[in-house]
Structures are given as structure tokens and as C-alpha cells.
Amino acid sequence: MFGTDGIRGPAGEVVTTELAERLAFAAARELLADRSAVGSPPTVVIGRDTRPSGPELEDAAVQGFTAAGYDVVRLGVVPTPAVAYDVSLYAALGLMISASHNPAPDNGLKLFASGGSKLTDDQEDAIEARLGESVVPVAKPGTDLGAGRPRRNDAAAPSYAEHLVGTVGRLDGLRVVVDGANGSASLLAPEVYRAAGAQVTALHCDANGERINDQCGATHPESLAAAVVEHGADLGVAHDGDADRCILVDATGTVLSGDQVLGLLALARKEAGLPGSDVLVATVMSNLGLTQAMDQAGIAVVRTAVGDRYVLEAMLAGDHRLGGEQSGHVVLRDFATTGDGLLTALQVMDRMVRSGRSLADLAAVVSLLPQVLVNVAAPKERAEAEDVLAAVIAEEAVLAGSGRVLLRPSGTEPLVRVMVEAPTQQLAEQVAQRLASVVGG
Image (cartoon, rainbow, N blue to C red; front, side, top):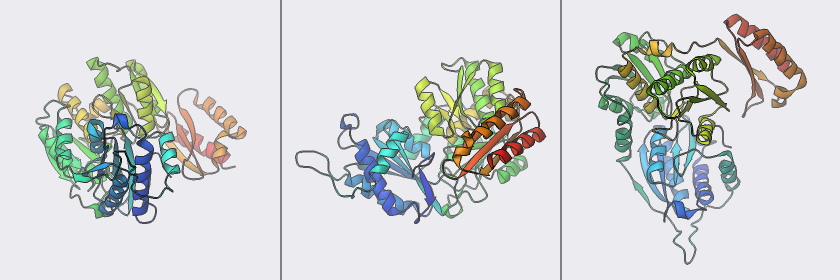
């Protein structure tokens, strides 16, 4: 039921009010085992994006949490990282109701454990196993565990915004166009960037959930790129529906890869001599060009499975400070417990102002190799078949260290993803097609 980033699907079909209530109750019951760390009664915070289905799902989740004995704080429409931030400050559990970059008819449920981190696979499995439990108040004689109480916290967004602005110096004079994807950062992102001193032009910031991610935001940066050039801005920032990531556009309208953003931030930390600046955590999908650039700078790259929670797990295990994905999820552990698109954009803008360099110049440190991804309809076992592994070895010999091959089974579909990087687009396509033919049998 849980994907790489919570539960997601069509609202009313997959993500129903019944599921929201049962998930809240099951999560509270499963994660309430250690009462000593969370106080009595414990508190859960709930945020949501702008989708029309959000309020109804929120009401259902409140019913589940309060039945399990949690006090519930409704944060209203806030970015996902704002939920994680509030959990890290005072709550035992957090829930974000959002389908991120998915279209408006979808919605999703994303949980944060005590401390503001995403759940582990084991925690998700345990919660899923309890979804069949009846949602009834669990008060017991002689205990203080009973029905919780809901309340609102309208100060959550301002507090989170103040935290963000406090992570950077003044950005006076910097011109930025921000695309809010009509999502949860539509109102907050322009306010935050202005508070830091930037001159802001807002785009797709109507907070209309019917149009969330509709030809806008991180998955559709075309209109942002055009607006950056039209307004003569220094950069553009496109958020997704829940603002846990961002896609950046330089002054020429060129859309940057998340790998380029990771590279420029890693170098900024290295030049500043910050603790832990000799390691960058990235996923197996990050471009080989990022690794090559980091090698030249003396920064080791630790690779993880796809998903920002796996990035964070590796960061916590090694006490690393910076990590992320090429999709724009960036985790800056000096300031946050999860991916944060607003924080990422602010840190990049701060780097631009402090260095006096353009975004294009800073991003040029990472020369991306052509990358080809082919989805092959095949059972996941084909990724480990003998003939496939032999073909991979043969193609790696063709690349001779100048490229990379990765085969990855889909976690949700009967697909094997064939990814190839090579010095030229033509070579990458040729290798990918040959491997796809073998995988497809």
C-alpha cells in the first residue's frame, strides 16, 4: 500500500475517508508504544495542500487520531516540510494530505514520525498490518489514554517561514519568478522570498486546488522558463503541489537538473569548510556527471535507492549533512529533517548572492552525461536473469568506464527500467535499446 512516498491515488477511490481514518488510528496505535518520549496526551499535526478532497480527508484523519488518544493540531494549507518542522518541535506524529505532483483528482497520505522523519519500511508494514482494526476510542480504566482533542494552529506557517528566512543572509536585489503550482506553497513561497529581500514575481500562485500542478509547477516548468526570460529575472523556482522539492531555471530559461543543484550546494558547503562537507548522498539515478564533479572536488558520493526517505536514512546512518535526488528533492540536515523546496531555493539564492555568480555559472560545475531511460514490460526477476546480467557486463565493456548502466525493477508495475549514461546521446540510446531487447526477451 505504501509507495516510496506514502499512499497516493485517486481521491474517493484509493484514498478514501475510511482509509484516512483507519490509517490515522493504526499509525497512532502502532507508534504510541513508547509514551515516555511524547508526553501525555501526545500530539499529532495535520497539514494539507489545496486539493478539494483535502478537508474531507483531514476530518476523517482527525477522527482516527482522536479516537486513538492523540490531540490533533490542524495546520491548514501548508507545505509538507512545514508539517515535518512542527513535528520536530513538539509533536509525536505528523500527517500530510497531498499527492505531491499528481493531478487534482488524486490525493495522498504521508506520515512523519517523532523528530520529523519519514517512516521506515518496518513501521509502514506494521501500520498496514493494523488497518483492519476497528476505529473505536481506546481509553482504559486507570490510564490517561482516551479521546483526544482537535484544535487549529494558524501560527504554524508564519513560524516555519521565519525559520526559513533565518537560514540565509539578505537576498536584496535578486530577482526571482516563483511558480507555486497552485499548491501548498502558492501563498507562502512568495512571502518567504520577499521577506529574505528578493524581488518576486508570482506565477501559478492562485492556490486553486482544482488547477494544482495543471501545466505548471515542478513537472511543467515551461511557463516558468518563459516568464524568467520575459521579466529579466535572475532565476525561477518551480515547486510541486506540496513544495517538498523545487526545480530551478537560470536567467536564460534553462531548466536545471536536481543533480546540478546538489553539486553547487555541495561545493558551497565544501568552500565554507562546514562539518560533513566531504560527503554527498544521492540516489542510484543521479547522473554520473555529478559523481565526476564531486570526485574533482574531493567529495565522496554515497548512493542509495530511489526515494528521499532512503536518502535521509543514509544521511542519518553516516551523519551526513547534504543529500537528494535529481528530481529536485534536497535534504539539508543543518536546517530540516526532510526534503524542502523552499529551503533549497533559499540556499541556492544565498549562494548566488554571496558568490556574486549567476545560477548558470554555479550549475556548470556539473557536466551532465546524456541519460536514456527505457521502461521494459517484463517481470522484475528479469533484472537479475543470467542472460541479462551477461548483456550488462558486455555493454559496460563497450562504455569502458565512460558511462554507466543501471537496471531497476519498478516497485509498483511489471516493468524493468533500463538506464544508460554515455558520453554521447547516440551511444546511450544504442546501449539502452540493446539491453531493453534482452530484458524483454
